[in-house]
Length: 117
Image (cartoon, helix red, strand yellow):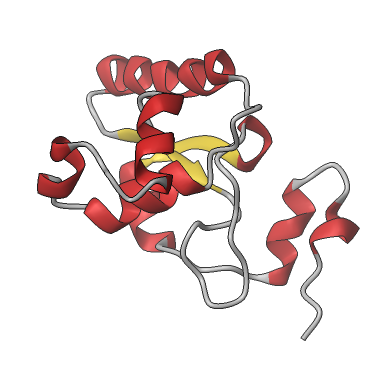
């Protein structure tokens, strides 16, 4: 998400025109809604910058992945630095929006993320 202002517009039901035309409109909106106002946007920008740097360096696509996915029937991750990691594009595509309970082991306090099914 480009700015907190765009997030507020989405929450108000008035998304910017570029979002309405975006091919991944639903994902962009989900990402906006999952980015809290208090998040350190500089830390987020560093992750995206690192993905671009690796892409240039390696010649293959690197992307920022949500460890806990944004769109899943059982969980909804936030767009915060500790829920993001830089991985290759093919790895991200293969993973899709899957969630496995062991994914919580990637966090410092995984017991807080266990599914209660």
